[in-house]
Image 1 (cartoon, helix red, strand yellow):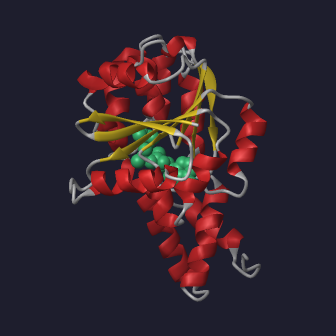
Image 2: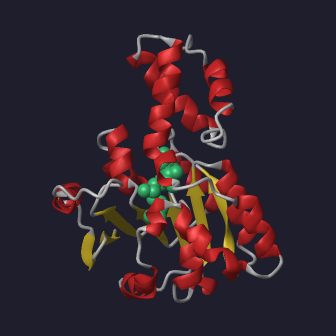
Image 3: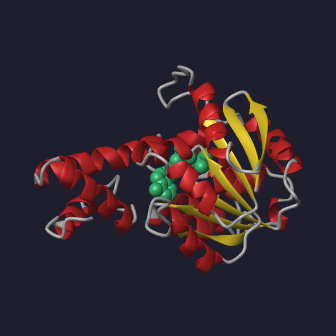
Length: 273
Ligand SMILES: C[S@@+](CC[C@H](N)C(=O)[O-])C[C@H]1O[C@@H](n2cnc3c(N)ncnc32)[C@H](O)[C@@H]1O
């Protein structure tokens, strides 16, 4: 139960003054602030600090530098999108830590395990849609939906999709929001495949059991899940083994088919429900 006395408007106004967090969807800020309000025993200053820390941990930490959406957009609209691709792909750590030279092979291997999807839902997408549009085979024949928590990322992706020849659209969402899977089914309709790339550990950190709930609730037949094999700081410390074990526990009681694919920097599973 959320505390009705939590000063949500004040917290949103304060977060809105931060250059790093002002584009994060309000529903995400509110969800995080409510928990911080409880944890800090209703201390407003501490709540704002804890909310910013959490926003950094789940999203802000992945930006290596401030994204230059407006400048990239101008170049893309002039027909030169290739000129800014390296900058775009270097800005978000999650995309940048993939070796670009191996991306075509990564997508080819993943697609070999999919049932010829006509539509894909890329959740917690970051700047991955740009990599996908550039390096995935058949990308242009697929309707592609991409969601993350940033409103400026949504606007940028929707602006750049035509230059990248992407059919589809970006949107703002909260994977931990109330009734997320139902809302997505209503808004997007039927989709063949969902991508959950390097997001489940972040959700699980916030809410134990979140991965299992999401995997069960998503209205798609196939889900491609990846896990990082190193932390943002570069430590491995058994991460791959723990994530593989966790997914095995979630799927043990189901009749889902789970196929593991190995890549040097990312652990990947294709789940068919
Ligand atoms: C580790 S990055 C992964 C990005 C992308 N999937 C990739 O593999 O390149 C995590 C992403 O999840 C997003 N994110 C964090 N919490 C989220 C939530 N509750 N709902 C939707 N997206 C979220 C962040 O903004 C960030 O872009």
